[in-house]
Image 1 (cartoon, rainbow, N blue to C red):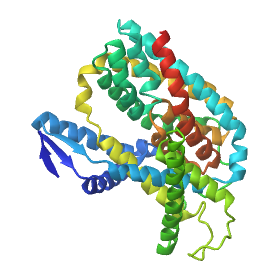
Image 2 (cartoon, rainbow, N blue to C red; image 1 turned 135 degrees about the vertical axis):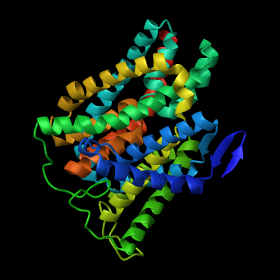
Image 3 (cartoon, helix red, strand yellow; image 1 turned 90 degrees about the horizontal axis):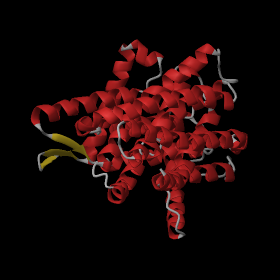
Image 4 (spheres, rainbow, N blue to C red; image 1 turned 60 degrees about the horizontal axis):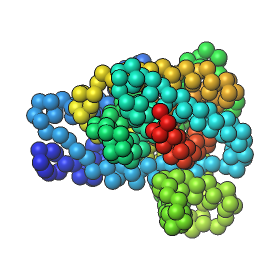
Length: 407
C-alpha cells in the first residue's frame, strides 16, 4: 500500500484479502439481521456496501481516497463463469432453448423500454436526451464497462461534459439496486404461488442450507481447480482466435463456452490424470463457484467511490427510481408469466433483477442466494448468463447508437 497524490492505493494481494474479510462481515451481519437473510440479500452485497460507506466516511473526514488494484478480482470472475460452463449439460442446454429465446426477446424489448424511460425522465429536467440514454441501457443493463466505453464519445459528440460521471453514477447505484432487488422478488413469487423445485438436485453455486455438513476432500478441491484451469486455457485460446477474426468478447464469456464444450464433448469417464470423473456439478465445483462469485462481488462493491456521485444526486436518483419501478413491473408482469410461472421462473426473475439494473455477476449472486435457500435451478443458471454475458453486449452495440442518433 502506498500514498500517491492524496490517495491510498491498495495492492492486489491486500485487496483480495480485504475482499475476503468483507465477505465474512456480510455473512455475520446477515446471520444477525433477520430480514437480510429472509429476503436472500447476498452476503457480499451486505459487506461490500457497508465498507464502501466506511471508505466514503474516511474520505469525508480526511480527504484520502482509497483505491484498489482489482486484477485478482477479474481472475475470480473467470473462475466463476468457467464453473458455470463445467456444470452445463447438453440436456439442460436443449431444455433451455425455448426459454432462452423468450428471455432474450424480453431483454431486448426491455433495453428499448429502459432507454425510452431514461430519455423521458431526462426531458422532465430539461436535460439532453443523450443523458437519458446514459441513464438507460448504457449504464444500467450495460454496466460500468459500457458506461466507461461510451461516455467519452457522448461527451465529445453531444457536448455533455460530465457524461463519464453520470454514466458511472448510474451504473454504481444501479448495481446497488440490482443487488437488493432479486431476493425479495423471488421470495414474493415463491411464497405467493407456493413454488418449489420439481426435484432436489446439486447446487450450481455453493451448497444449500441442508448441505453445509457435506465434506469435500483436498483432492476433490484440487481436481476441480485443475478442471477449471484446463477450461480457462481453452477459453483463452478461443478468445485469442476470435480476437484475430475481429470479434472481441470478454474473457469470461469464452471461458464459459469452453467449459460447456469440454463438459459435453468429452465423455465423463474419459481417462484423467487424477483418476476421477469430470467434476461437473460436484460439491467442489459448487464451492469454488461460491467463493469466486462472493469475493468478486465483495471487492466490486467495497471499491465503489460513493463520494464522486453526490453532485449528481437529483436527476440521477429520479432516473433510477423510475427505472427501478419499471424493472420490478417487467419482472413480475412479463418475465415470470412468460417463463412459465414455476420455480425456475422465480429464480430467473431474481437473475433478471440483476441484469436489468446491474451486471452479470449481480444476477448470478441473486440467483445463488435464492437457490441456496429454496433449491437448485439449473435452467436459470444456463439461460441467464448466456443472455446477459453474451447477447446483451451485442444488442447494446446496436441499440445505443440508434437512440443517440434518433432521439
